[in-house]
Length: 221
Image 1 (spheres, one colour):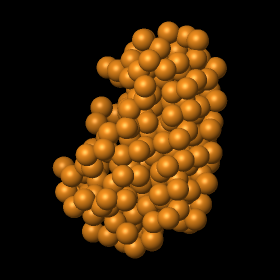
Image 2 (image 1 turned 60 degrees about the vertical axis):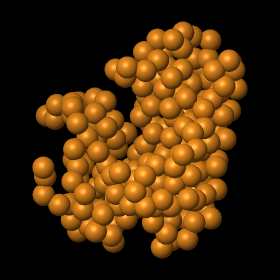
Image 3 (image 1 turned 90 degrees about the horizontal axis):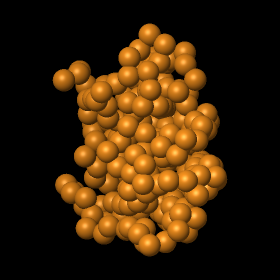
Image 4 (image 1 turned 90 degrees about the vertical axis):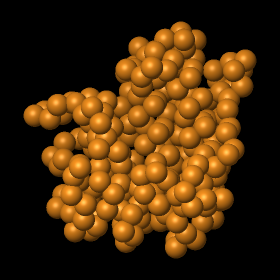
C-alpha cells in the first residue's frame, strides 16, 4: 500500500483544479464529443469487445449511462457507506443512436446535479467521499475512458479531449506523471496504454476525496 497522498495543492507537478463553476459545462461538452465519435460507428458491430474489457461495446455503453446517473444519485441521496439503489439502464432493444441520446441525458442529469449541489456537500464513493466537482470529474473519466474502449472495439481512432483530461488529472490523479500529453496520461492512469518509459498499469484508482478532506489521502492503486 502506498503512503497517504498529500493535498493536491502541495503535490509537485499537480496542475490547477478548475473552479467549481466550470465543471457543469465541461461535463456535457465531453459527453457531446463522445457521443459524436460513437455515432460514427453506430452501424458497426457493437457485440465486439470494447477494447480490453470483458464487456461488449453495447454493454460498456450501458455501464456508462448507469455510472453517470449513479453519480448524480449519490450526490442527491448522500448515503454514508453504500451505493444508491437506483440503476438506470439503456433499452436493450433500442438502436445505438437512441442509446447515445440516453448517455447524453445521463450526462446532463449529472451536470445539473453538480451545478445545484453546494460546495460543502460530500457524498460517498468507495474511493473517497467527494464533492460535486469530484463527481463531475469521475463522470468525465467514465465518458473518456469508456468511449476510448468502445472506439477501439469498433475500429475507430479517438483520444479524449486534452483540456478535459488535464482537468481530470488535476482533480482525480494529481500524482500523475508530468511531461506527457494529458489525454495519453489519463489513459495511462486508467490502465489503458503505456507511456514512454512507463509500462501499462495493471491496477489503478483515482483520489476521489475533496482536496481539503482527509478522504483525499486514500491511497492509489
